[in-house]
Image (tube, rainbow, N blue to C red; front, side):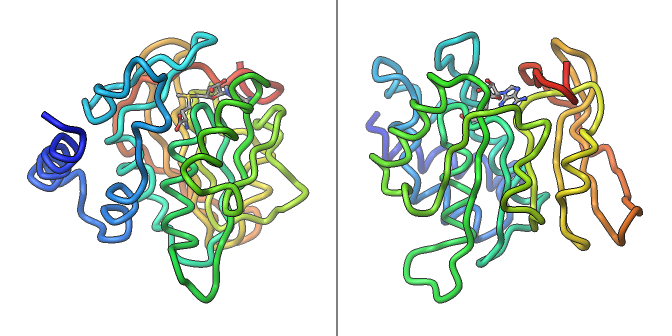
Length: 222
Ligand code: SAM
C-alpha cells in the first residue's frame, strides 16, 4: 500500500476511535509528511501507529501522540509554542501547521529545545526539507529550563517524561496557557498531565491518561 493510502487509513482509524476530533489537528496531520521525519530506511513505516527509533536511544513518538497533545493544548493560529524534546522535529511541524497555517494573517511560532546536538541537527534538517524552517526554531539545550528568551508561551509541550512538572516551564507559561507533560517513572508508564495556568501562582493539574515516554534528562528532570 502506498504512503498516501496508509496515511488516510490511519486517519480513518483515529476518527473512528475519537483520537482525531479537531479539524485543525487533522488538517495539520494531512499536510505534514511524517515520512520526511523518520530514518530513510523506515519511510514505509511512517504511518504505522507506533514510535520509531531516530538514533541516540531516542524515538519519534507514535503519530496518535501528536493528536492527543495538540488537542489538549487547544492550539490556535498566532500561538507562541515551546516544545521540550525536538527529536525528529515532527511534532514541532504539526504545531507549526496549526499556529502558522499557510496564508494566515497572524502567524505564530514554535520554539523547540533538544539536548542532543545531533538530534537538534536532524530536526533542523527535517524541518527545512519539509518547509518549516521559518516557522520553527530549534535550540540546543536543557529544555527543563524552558527558553526564557521568548517567554511567555501560549502552550508548552514536553515530549519526554519527568519526575515532576519543571518549575521554569510553569513560570514561562502565559496566564490562560496550557502545558502537557508525561510525569512519573523514569522508564515505562507515566501519567500525561495537563496543566492550566489560571492566574499568576495558580495552576490546575489534571491527569489525562497513561503514556510511555523516554526520560526527560536535565536540571529539573532526571
Ligand atoms: N517530539 C519528538 C518528535 O516529534 O520526534 C519526539 C521526542 S522524543 C520522544 C524525546 C526527545 O526529548 C529526545 O530527542 C530527547 O533527547 C529529548 N530530551 C530529553 N530530555 C530533554 C531536555 N531536558 N531538553 C531537551 N530535550 C530533551
